[in-house]
Image 1: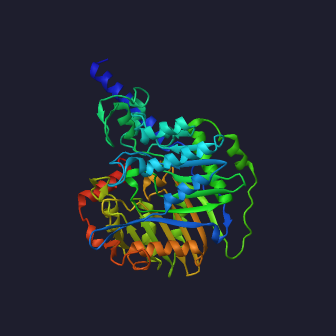
Image 2: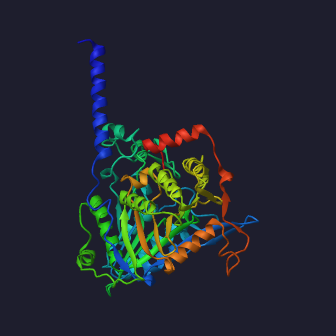
Image 3: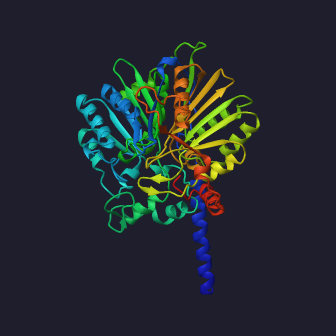
Length: 499
């Protein structure tokens, strides 16, 4: 057989293998316990609390900062005496470390880790588990001093096994699985650390290009008197992210146990084991909802693609006179943007506040995907504004629905409105909360949105300057570039992007 034909047959065989590997890992089922819409739980309005972190700029250029989320997180950690389960995407001093004027020992990551260490020291027999993403160790390419401190104190650190998740980067992951993922060491000096100082091995760098993550952000606290508390947020205990805008919901009871159950699926996927016995006792205890009445809130934990299904269901229910306020860090999903336009066509009012995709830890971004999606939506009648950032990011992921002036639904958590976040590639956790529009949590979420949108509802009140400029008109970051429009389309379709 001619050598050329042999070479072509060999090449064809390799391509078939790569295609088979790629198709399998692109379409495979997610591990058990993921992609779930949990049972509906009934909560009293007083048992749910809304928190927000806001960084805004005064007319003279001075920063104004209001932070609630991690003060609450640290307080809850200190109060725990039965167990702690935390799952956060970013916990490190990468990307520039703490903001200017903050010492490393007083940085957000250090304070969070020290709180876990102190909790373990105070109750040595208490299970304290931190589930996180391997990006914090550059996929094994570096040692993470914060994790070493946790290990030494007895806190269990679980690096999520991302290889069990589906692959989103169609242009790359199949080749990585077939040729690179099974050999080599992440340690080495061949490649400069793209997120900080030092160098890493080629293997670690190649794994990073898969662009997938355990992107969850949550805390679950167990108390000996039987209470279980949960918090779901868009915020990371990440020093360089400590000035980002974010939101959170805190709750207790059966909904917090559902959150704990959703985390056991990640723990089992990554360790092959169930949670420790003390946590198992909570999961096996029968949970009883509060009595349902006309004031009750209906709540459920939603993860991975179930978040998208919930969003589409809620948007699909919008009609004439209904309202939807959106505050988002990333928006690129094709199906969701079409759903918003259809809601507008049915007579609903949609307001969208977006991060301008301008800053990323000292580096300038090109505006993709938000500016391209914003232009498409504005052309079809959706009102869009930009949060006015000044180096930090508007990192919120929140949707507030108002139906007929009587009912409301609030959905928030870790998930950006992108293919990677909402199509079973990343790990994500959100909460969906529905009830009377007069419930305090909806009033507070509405006040928050009005404030960041620029309606001046809080400006000039106690502790809030009257000259804050929180948002900018769509025209400020209008980008008509056909090239970037095509680039956004390719990146969203193929997964060859970080959003």
